Image 1: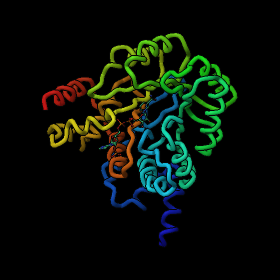
Image 2 (image 1 turned 180 degrees about the vertical axis):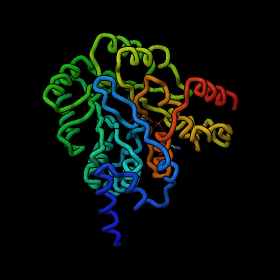
Image 3 (image 1 turned 180 degrees about the horizontal axis):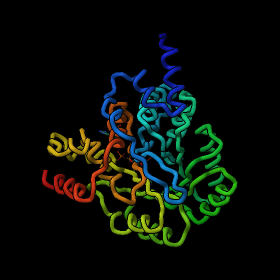
Amino acid sequence: MTDKTFSERRRKLIKSGLGMLASMIALPQLAISQTNKNTLIKKAIPSTGESIPVVGLGTSRTFDASQQVEQIKLLPVLEAFFANGGSLIDSSPMYGAAQETVGRLLQKLDKPETLFSATKVWIEGKQAGIDQMQQSMDLWGIDSFDLMQIHNLKDWQSHLETLREWKEQGKIRYIGITTSHNRFHEELVDIMNRESLDFVQFTYNIDNRTSEKSLLPIAFDKGIAVLVNRPFQRGDLFRRVKGKELPDWAGELGINSWGQYFLKFAVSHPAVTCAIPATSKVKHMVDNMQAGYGELPDTATRQRMIKYLQKI
Ligand SMILES: NC(=O)c1ccc[n+]([C@@H]2O[C@H](COP(=O)([O-])OP(=O)(O)OC[C@H]3O[C@@H](n4cnc5c(N)ncnc54)[C@H](OP(=O)(O)O)[C@@H]3O)[C@@H](O)[C@H]2O)c1
């Protein structure tokens, strides 16, 4: 088989959602045997019951590649995402050229059918928001988004009105709002209590559990899907465990790396729907996607995971 036929076959499989098979054909260097044995874990979006895989993909910094050649370097990363069952990609106009990169690469992959597109509006003013969201559609090369979120609560009253109109018109399927700052938690709680939202996005990881106090319980009670940003605390978690061994019992949970330890912890919270780690490396992408297979830790194991990390 020529290289061209090889890659055409792989793209067709990725597009049709048979990504795992595609990875067997074209990415033999990846350790997929374990993921093959296990089941892809999905969680339901409470407002509709639609299920999505618990590990998605963030694009802040990692996909901000302004040169076309740099963007193409990320193609195998995105291929590995879809080949290993990925669906939700999160971006924002705040992330430089990230949306352009995503759009260019999705075109190369012939827009996989499993894509769940999520971006944000991040600007002051209703009309400016409309123009920005329209531009994002052009950059992604799509004519509707699955999820549109208001980034960091910026001018949320103006945009929420537009998002409701766009949802009615079928330009977006879900409405969300995001933050990664503790100082916005109180205001976000207030919005969650007063407004009707499908998704909320904030930071949650094993070392930063502030959102357990109010955001996660409210999301759970009100039936709002939760996207977890910074599941690795921007990579700080890896620096913290550098040179440290995983506990002996990690293997029983299907955890083979620190990345999987952190991700399984984040997505096993009952209120969490999906975590969106960012990476620029195929190896890390495959590692992260494996966290979305098999089993998730129960409450007792989650406590054990916290204690182990505190001890080392
Ligand atoms: N307010 C908001 O709406 C908001 C705020 C913050 C973030 N977000 C979203 O959340 C996403 C995730 O947050 P984040 O990008 O700030 O940080 P993050 O996902 O917590 O960490 C990303 C870092 O972890 C490294 N990494 C990823 N997988 C790894 C692995 N398996 N092993 C070792 N290192 C690994 C990456 O480096 P490599 O490239 O070397 O893999 C990168 O430096 C963002 O990309 C964005 O989409 C939204």
